[in-house]
Image (cartoon, rainbow, N blue to C red; front, side, top):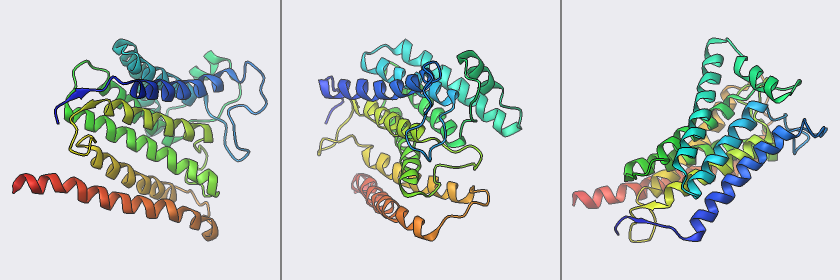
Length: 278
């Protein structure tokens, strides 16, 4: 099937809703200290507070998704570039141990006196999300670029799913560093942001006979593999924390389903190549 730009209300509404939810959560977290809300940036008692830098990043990415929905490419590119710059600076500070400079500046400008450091998996989500939005904002679409955007979105969604499942099962899969775990609100925002990015790529592109983008199986495979990889990273970086065997059993359904999806998607992705050779 030929390329087509799907302008139906479902795609635009999906982008606006996902972007609005992501931006709304970020803005609500930033506004919580000013409103003197005691449960600042929390939904679950076991969750760590959401750092102001993370909330600012999710708010910017959510507004960038809304910019895609209403087709304001300059707004999307500016917000994505701001998020990308912040995520890169946070990553450099972590790598060289020079921080937290950026986080301190953001907290001071927002008037937040007591805050926690941003989690490394949250930094990864903001970095990948901003990169996908920068690739997506342009007015010229290419099939390969849309596939890359969707893959980045699926990885963002996978990191959020792993963290959310950790809170549901009691296994600290949300902590890539014991002193800086991803908050529950950051995990939820990651899932919403990842879905919105995938939907933004799905809005335009070449479809196969089943009506799905030709790169969809690759996106599913990448997301499923990212779930297992994010779980493995959390296990290897647990900093002496003990994962109780009875609690780890709760991760089995997620791991089994992701393995099955990755195998099935990989086989489906290979079929067009085999038919093309024949």
